Amino acid sequence: MDKINLPELNFEKLNGLIPAIVVDKSSDKVLMLGFMNKTALEKTIETKLVTFFSRTRNELWTKGESSGDFLHLIEIKPDCDNDTLLIYAVPDGNTCHTGKYSCFGIEKDSQLHFLNELFDLIKKRKIEQPENSYTTSLFNSGTNRIIQKVGEEAIETVIAAKNRDKNEIINETSDLIYHLFVMLAEQDIDFEEIVKNLKKRHNK
Image 1 (cartoon, rainbow, N blue to C red):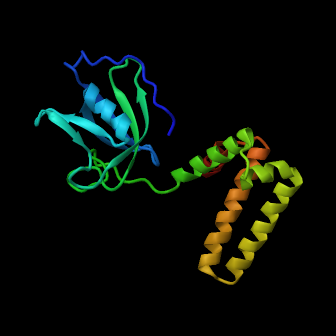
Image 2: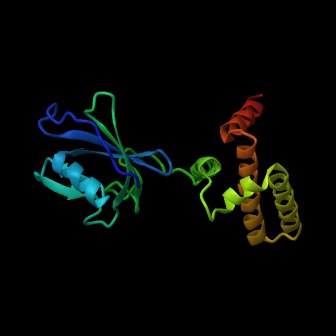
Image 3: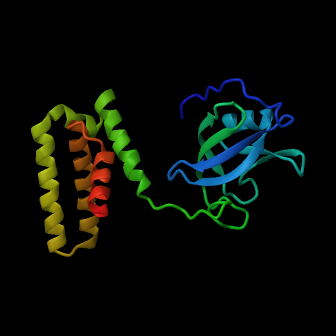
């Protein structure tokens, strides 16, 4: 995780506390609302485990310290007035003390959000070109090779489907989607453009 640099925050507005809204990094779903003082915020950043200040017990508490359902810190974003925090985290389990995913009754999202993360990573690989990366090697191999890989994976997916081999269908479809993403990134076409086009067709 990158180093967290925050502006001067306004803790005085709520007598030394600041609201902290926790969001699931993998789905952008709101998990809970807590309050932090300066010490809780510092401990959150130091331990990478989201920590709050309990107004009822008048003490710090790290989410998950009794249940094991920790919130692993990913990113902190202050609002425009620097008096509220948006905490992006990865939950170990359900966040609410009732055993539910979210304290607001929000249902857990599907894994489809990962597709956006994957496409963003592929675009990042195209720009940064890290060594020992298969994605980097694909971009360096050129347009024709990338297109060829899409074709190869499409054929292998068809064969797996013809054989009704569930595991192979899952594996080959995963390969196909990945290589399609590489092709889109190479052609400077954003994944969102595909989604928008599908929604447009659906609405017709």
